Image (tube, rainbow, N blue to C red; front, side):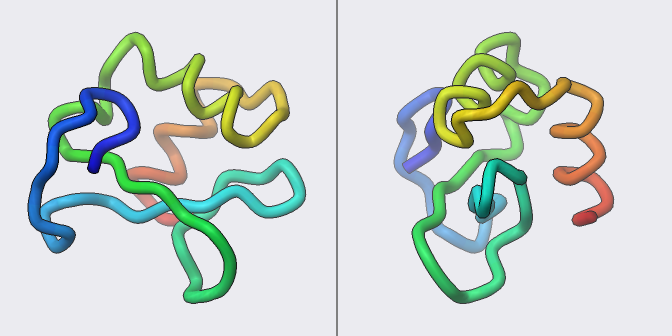
Length: 71
């Protein structure tokens, strides 16, 4: 389920992310994670939701960099 739009899609059509120590990362296989669908990568609500999940003030530029490049 996408954390933004709450739609259920196949996992291979979604991006799997996680927060570790207040940092947003691509899922590495350990810990809790969440999914983001490709339609919601540019959503206005994404910034607010990621900040709530990671409990840290992350800029929207950093979020997009992680989504696009996986850093």
